[in-house]
Length: 86
Length: 436
Image 1: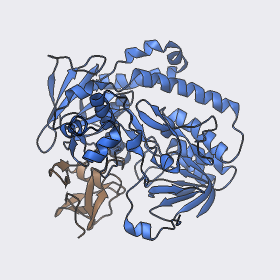
Image 2: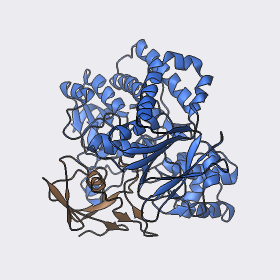
Image 3: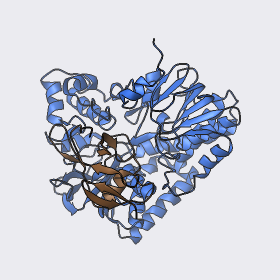
Image 4: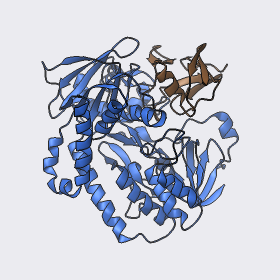
């Protein structure tokens, strides 16, 4: 089975699933904290309009989890605030 | 690349426009998603293409998917995060997104839009949670709840803030669209089989939890959506899917100078009988011209595709469009967003999720700093200046400001975006934007 790595742990993926789908299927509900109050955020609009689901993928911060389809082996990381390029 | 007609948005309206225009010239469709279809025809990656997309492919339409349009220049050049597309005519079919209405706790993980919950299921075969409350207003809540229940979620209730009894004001329209009644009855029967309670004139007052939602408080509401004291009830859930209608994505059109009208509290692109906007050569179809559902989007798309190709539009399409628009007008009348939700906010309830601007801050901008409209509040508080550029909060901030000033709610200024999407500097540097 294909996998991605999320914060150091392997998660199973189906071909064509989005990052948000992989995380929700694994029971992960939030993967970002906000810039001002550090509040947890996850999926909200689900169709690319709200930018709440931003996440770091393969070192690129602020990728929309709801639009981005995973590739096996992707390294996904929670993001604090605006995130940092790795 | 260059073509005769470029269509922005590959949902029902955009695909219908592309298919119609492809008989008369070269056509390209630009869409944000990995596959065409929009929200209505959203499919998992391994599913065969929707018939309308297959028809477009057979007619030689170029599908540019996974591309964000950030600006359309007059003339027309469509700028994307890939190569630009130039064309003689543009069809804007950018659709709409859910309209969320703020309530305490609506920023907790586990609260998501009804459309988002459905997209997760339709596009990924993943449930957004296990025990789900569906709430808001509009007929869309029923297929969302039915889909979630069929896929194995425990739907803890559907809470509709309005009442479908309002359809008694529109007997003729209902009689001419029996298919809609049959569809709604099918969803209700399915929900009954899954023992899902469906409550009219009820709303979610608050979502509770610290790191994610663990429960909601629901209550009965009056006609104006004001909670009825003593009817509050706590329901345990891990997910809340909310939606109060939709917000048309007009920004590509407004940046080109297209006029808008306010419809159901949000701006829509103004079009004439040929789906032409107020800017010559720019046409619009589907939800971006007013929320009306898939059948209206398909007719409008076909008309826009023909008109953008300079072809006469058959009168039968006019008549079909008029019928669907009459039904859409009845829906808008039966399922409005009423102002009672404002009474339910706490001072620290966020209105703008991106910039984390709460209701107290918006109130202070009006009562303390003298702001008289939503635009002034935006400039003083940053509400609407974040990542989503007011897409999620625009309508809510406009309502909150109007409530405080006694003026009319108008979010139009909050939906003007010179760039319709965030652009990476590298994409701008590689672009062919003309100096002006």
